[in-house]
Image (cartoon, rainbow over the protein chains, first blue to last red):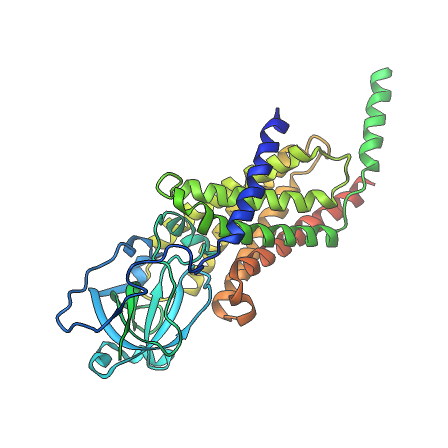
Length: 179
Length: 218
């Protein structure tokens, strides 16, 4: 009886493993959102609309909400690979009009605004596992390249675990700024 | 008389079972967890994503744990003596234990974390969350494997304790190495790294238990 159950299970496991390995995060062929490839001039009077990623932030109480949605512009300076909590961490050198978004805590990230795209990977951090596994439609890449001049929108928070540094967490969307 | 002879023969057969060394067991467990967590993360993050609304949350985590269990079971079975248990029994026991363990750990750790004061980072609190994850994963895995092993190896309750201790140390150490020291080598592939650390510690404790069991049995 057990063998009857196990054999198809192993076949399914192998098939899923092959499919899963072939389809990795940030594959440009998957889940491309409409804003990422859009080149826009930043409209001054644009309205920032919150995205649907807020429920997928683990331990939400570690972040102090300042504004549900903020838009800023700047140059991407850093980008991490997978982090243990499943997020991708980016750092943005803000354009002068937006520097007031920063706090003293941002000095730990070279004076850059931190951007966190949540649930980009399945996190090995157990506390975040169920939360990310519940997200049917994470905000996926492709993400900007280092040096790109971009606009970003996200939930503006202070990270209480990291000296109250300012972050857009989660990052809702981004786009290139044409010169 | 016949029954006594039969019993003695079964006992003799059991004593002739050559259990793996602790190094073999550690290597198999480390490889099983590392590969399992890597495969699982791709599956949950990609192949199963379109099924999200159906396979949401906890069901996804059950599948995540089950895949880790299959990988762990295959690697451990590779170093086990063939006469100990049938392949399917070992795989099913490990799969079930791992699925339940990861699902329970994810739910409990999430609730525990949310119940804590999060206004500042609390290293001890984070350690407690990691340790809780280890206890639950180790307990479920240990119970599942003990349940099938006890039919061939009596007096094996220490197996559960070894699993709990090893997995707990593994989750705490992986949190320390990844979180506090932020070692770049580990950060580049967190699922592989956490799986390997978890597996190595679990394997050491279970392997040492097997070694002491073998000595006692002689």
